[in-house]
Image 1 (cartoon, helix red, strand yellow):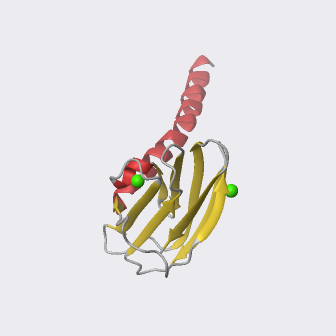
Image 2 (cartoon, rainbow, N blue to C red; image 1 turned 135 degrees about the vertical axis):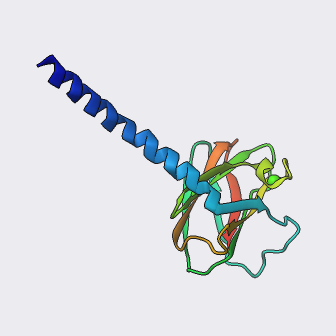
Length: 149
Ligand SMILES: [Ca+2]
Ligand SMILES: [Ca+2]
């Protein structure tokens, strides 16, 4: 009887281990997308732009459909107040990327996160991408723009 019980406990233990294993596999998939600093001097006048505001602890969600064969995606989150900290998460079809901070684009205190994501195999995973802007450390109400193109 105790042998069966031990076997059952091992099975339960194995089942509990499944969740972290799956997470680890998603982390490994990060290698399929390359993220590099974007060009902060570039104008985004011609790109579709969203405007929103954020407070401490708030999360804003945006999404974009990435067509198959898309080689890269430029992300530009701009709030312009370096004393406030906003972070950017990118939920791709192959896993969650982030958080990205002001410093993630190589320019640590300009209140802006400019990144370029590209697929290591030549194209990005197609599907709906979700972008999360999070109010990491925000005094009052911070306004910002965000664009993904
Ligand atoms: Ca908001
Ligand atoms: Ca920056």
